[in-house]
Each structure stands twice: as structure tokens, then as C-alpha cells.
Image 1: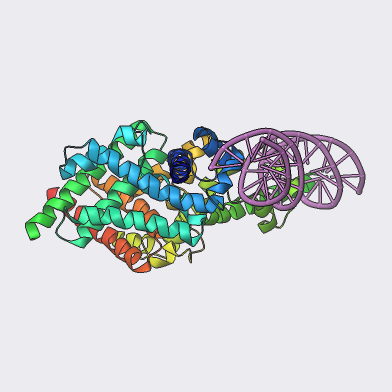
Image 2 (image 1 turned 180 degrees about the vertical axis):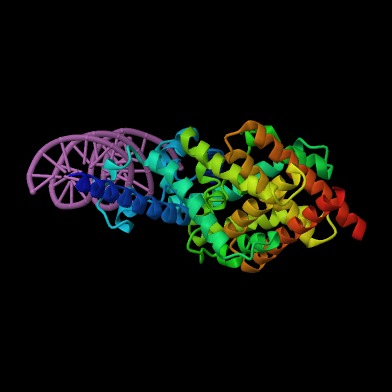
Length: 192
Length: 192
DNA sequence: GTCTATAAATAGATAGAC
DNA sequence: GTCTATCTATTTATAGAC
């Protein structure tokens, strides 16, 4: 009996995890409104009806999916970087990230506008993921302001580069943001 | 007869202009997917059925509304600024802009992610508005790269500040972006 | 917990009167 | 050109069988 319960619990957690991974992937790629619950469930290899035994509404899925997307993107980042600060920013502000060739995309950049019409729970979740991102940047800079400038150039630069329908200009923009971060952080070091 | 034709033409142009102004306002505030044709037409004081004698589809409206929003935002900006470079960036990266207190909001910042799932015509229009924005910045900087860093900090910083559900952090972010632009442009001047 | 079937609401788009 | 009425498709969410 206990064994069966444990299996059931594990089974449910697996299903929920599959749904969240599917949602994180689809939302960051196609935005909130363009993705239906049906699509999320299909990618998770389940049917639409099963959704509501895991979440009360699509809004609830939004919030949890953003956290999941943040974790997935960070893990993939850590795994594939040399660890240097400029290595991280270059990978973040890369053509591969912009072109959605990475397995996991940063929800902060890819959903920055989508967030705006969602409820406060969703916004709070986005804000928390952002704060984690900022904390990470702070470890690499002396001043908080430089950290904020860095994340603005990373997240904002990537979001803009993705929106532009001109590859050459978009490439220039990504490089410019990398250089901007390098300039501001090196000034920050001189001051300290 | 000629007089009547002229009046008709004027009337139609007025209606189309009202629809575009309404759409520019609603889209920048609430995003593409959240705004229905019905809402656009209601704000333009017309009914749903009249829409299709001006536009073939909602997509066609998107594209034209982005251009309209860009023009409206720029005009309001010019009208209310002292003309100095930092005056412009401070007004752009202001609490009023972030809080949607301005009459016209910048479509580049408020739709940067929404654009992603639209067709190429819409993306091209967004790109053109962006190019105009960059050209404007270039007049204030020596290098093209500094201009790109400036627009990334403006548009990206505003988009992020609006997404964050923490007023204090959001305020810091706006200030940091203003300072970042000041730093990068002053370095740019020294080099020349 | 997962499935099929369906309810209820809303959207984009069209038809025809004036 | 603008209106009312309607078609068709899609969505979130629920009901009930297994």
C-alpha cells in the first residue's frame, strides 16, 4: 500500500514536471497568448483534461512555468560556460540564443512584454526570477548600479535583437551590448 | 459631385485615422493579443463591422498601428522636451512613461516581445520604427556602437522596468540606465 | 490521475440592409 | 462607409467514465 502511494506520488510529480517543462519551452518560444493548454499537454504527452488535476487555471501554470524556465535556462547556462563573466554574457547575447537554437531560453528576455497583462502572481514570479538574475550579476561587479546596467543590456539587448527583422543590425546590436557591458564593468573596477 | 467625393474621402480618412489612433493606444497599453478588433472600434466610436472596409485583417492593422504609435510617441516627445540629449533620455526612462501616464507610449519598448509571433510585415514595420529611433540616437553620438548601446539601454531598460513588480528596484533600474547612457556617451566624446 | 465529451465564452471574419 | 446579425473556429474550463 505504501509502495503504491509512493509510486502514485512519483507518477504525479513526473507528470507535473513534464507539463512545466513543456510549458517553459513553449511559452518562452511562442509567448503566453499564442500557446494553448492543449499544446502544452500534447508536448507533455498528455491530454487536455488531465491538466486540471495539476493546476487550477492557465494563470497558475504561467507563474510556475516562468520559475521553471528560469531554472532550466540557468542550469543550461552554467553547464555550457567557462565561468568567466564575459563568457556568460557572450553566450547570453549570442546568435544562438537570439535564434532560439538553445534548448532553454531566458524567460526574462523572451517574455518581458508578455508579462505585462498577466496578474500579480505571475508578475511577482517574473520579478523574483529577475532578482536572482541581478544577484548573480552583483557578484561580478562592485556597484549595484553597474549590475543593473549589465542586466539591462543583457535582457533588453537580447529582447530587442530578437524583435528586429534585420540580421546585420541585430548582430551589431548584440556586439554593442557585449562591449557596453565590458566598458561599464571595467570602469567599475577602476573606481573600486 | 466633386465636393461630395472629397467629403467622402475626407470622412474615410478621418475614420481610418481614428481607428489607427485607437489601435496605437490600446496595443501599446495592453498588447496585441489582449486587444480585440471590437475594442479598437469601440474606442474609435465605430462598430465592428466597419473595420473591414479599412483593413483586410487584424494583422494589417498591427503593422500600420505600430507606425502610427511610433509617430505619436515621437511627436509627443519632441513637444515636451527641452531638446537636450539627456533631457530626452530622462523623459523616456521616466516613471511617467513606465507607469503609462503619458498619452502615447513607445511601441518599441511596450511591444518588444509581442512582436515576436507576428508575421514578417509586422516585424518589418517594427524594425523600421527601430531604425528611425537609432538614427535619431546617432545624431547625438560619435560612434554607431554607442548609439546602439544607448537605444538598448533606453528601450530594454524601460521594458524591463515596466515588467518588474517592485517599484523601488524598478526606479533604481531606470536611474541606472540613465547613468549608463551618460557614462557611455561621455566616453564616446573623449575618444573623438 | 488520465481519458473522452462537452459546455460556455470569445475571437476574427463575412453577409446584406441602409 | 457604416450598421446589425451571423458564421465558424478556438479557447478555457467542467463532467463523468475508467
